Structure formats: C-alpha cells, structure tokens
Amino acid sequence: MAVCLASNMTVPELLPISDFRQRQTEILLQLQKAPVVLTQRGRAAVVMVNPAQWNDFMNELEDLRDSVCAAEALEEYNRNPDDVVTLDELEDDLKAEGLLE
Image 1 (spheres, one colour):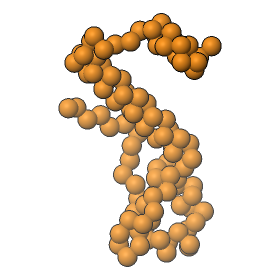
Image 2: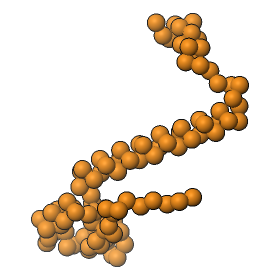
Image 3: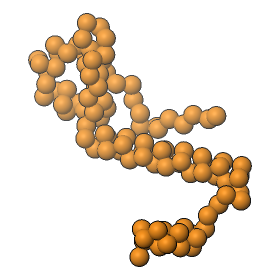
C-alpha cells in the first residue's frame, strides 16, 4: 500500500508548556505556519493547530472515511452481487413501509 504525505506537512515544533506562558503571541503566530506540540515533563501534552488547518484535517478525514465506505461497499457487491437493491426497489420498499412519500 502506497503512503502519500501532503507536501505542505512539516514536523511540529516541540516546546515546553512553560514556554507558552512566556511566548504566547509568538507561538500563536507560528500556528499559522505549522502545528505546535507543547510538552510537559518531556512528553507531548497538547497539539495546537490553527482552525483553518483543523478544518482541512477534518474535511480530509471525512473524505477518507467516505472512501473506505465506498471501498467496503464495492467489496460487498463483488462478494454478493445478487444482494444489490436498486434505488427504485429501495424507494418502493420505503414507500410500502410508510417511510417515504
């Protein structure tokens, strides 16, 4: 399986959480370029990312989940093509059950 990494991904900077108190403005500006990982006692405690990048991550995650669902549906169809229900059949069934007008 091939792994594709976005070309704009950078390794987040690791900073002690105590630095955030002292360099808050600088760190918040840095978030426009890349995520920041705050550490506590040498271990990652918080990952900070700007809202636009967070939204991009969530949209990409949703797209990836949709792709997995589509691949699973295709796999199921290939295993049992006779079990497929057409849209017209589904609509008729839903109308018969009073779930669709």
